[in-house]
Length: 191
Image (cartoon, rainbow, N blue to C red; front, top):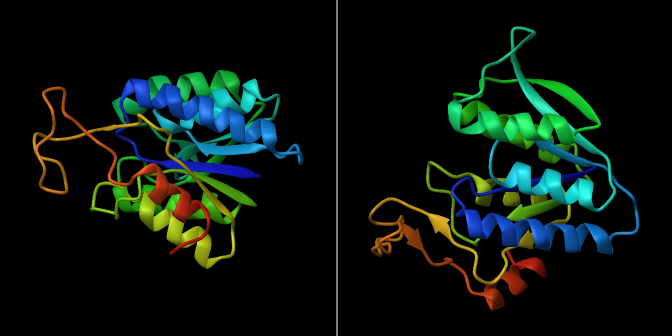
């Protein structure tokens, strides 16, 4: 299976760019592998759309607590609803979707189930809110190939001052933390 992980705070234009790049990556693969993603908004929806547009199967994981489907946080509900319409298969995964550590642990299990990971990642370190860098390192430590997806022009939403201490623009957007050349180096396996 092909798994996608990535930043949860991408701008709407960035998600469109990411979806197009993910579809390009999927179109170039000859193996016909299924896409696997945890239900949520943002990158999971972009990946789900790209998987289906590439003519592949999509498996969506929904959280459960004590064998009962769990209520997703409000920001993830509409994304999860769209993913359910795109999915050919839905599986249940036990974790609390409101707990960050539980989400990261669930993502580790998803990554471990994959043969390849697409990481929508600007190269920034994990910061207590975002675990993308951690998941990239987790996959690589297990020998799972990681393809970094960070299209030119992609940006993340942020607080008035971003995590690097630089002020964000008026729309709350900060530029990518890594240049395209840096992303290419990461794609090549630099650690």
